Structure formats: structure tokens, C-alpha cells
Image (tube, rainbow, N blue to C red; front, top):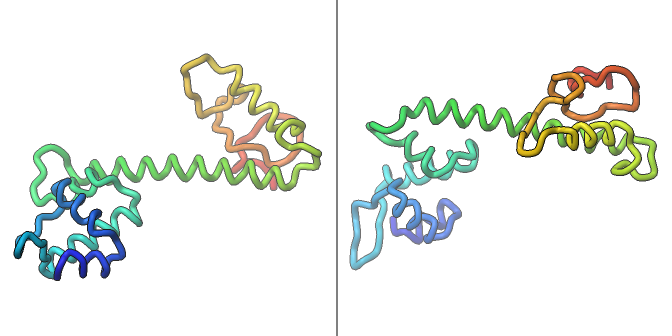
Length: 164
């Protein structure tokens, strides 16, 4: 298949396929009159690269390590474990963001961004941190805070531990 036909089948630009080639992920064995042609195995490899990018949100270097037949620099399992850890952190961050947004919808304040006591407490805790130190736990409890779930007073609990 020509580069144009492969690009169309995968729904990507031909420049994407050229970039993947430049990154060493693929090397079309057949060139005719300066044009790239891909065999079935190469098209499957390109589809695999695309699949890994879309579903695993992997970088091209991670994909290269995963697809390498013999990798002396990295064990592909380490790459996958690191990516799983990264996705877990992203899930935690997105869960916290969702909790804040859901709380904002339930908050009975005219301006939730400036009047919500739980948001104010979380902002105050953030401001109390030492500069340059990124902390993922609240200063008051030492536990992760995923955001407020209501206006109840008392000990600050992570959202996932609070009653809804």
C-alpha cells in the first residue's frame, strides 16, 4: 500500500507516518520512485502504534520501547508500569477536579469560587505550603484531599471518604 492509502486507512496525515519513520518506529522496506510503500505487517505495526497512542496515551519513545524486539536500554515492562502509575495519578487528579465541580453545583453560595467555605479552606491550605513544594495531602489531616463534598464542619476528609 502507498503511504497515502495507509494514511487514509488509519485516518492520519502522511506527515504523521513520515514522523513515525523519522522516530524509528517504522521503516518501509519498499520504495518506488521515492515513494514509500508498506506491506501488511508494516501497516499492522502502524495501526498498533496508533492504537497505543490513542488508548494508552503513550509517548512515541514509550511505544518504541514496547515494540522493540530486543531492547538493551529499557525493559518494556518498566515502561508499561511507569505509564500505569502516571495514568493512576491522572485519574486521581481528574477525580478531584470532578468532585470540586460537582460540589460547585451543589453549593448554595452566590459565588462558589469566593464564598464556599470548603474551597476557601483548601485554598488557604495551599497558600500555607512552603514555596516550591508541591504537596498532594492537606496540611490539616495529612491525607489526600480530593475536594469538598458538602458544607459539613469537623475533620476534613478526602472526598472519597465523605458521605454524599
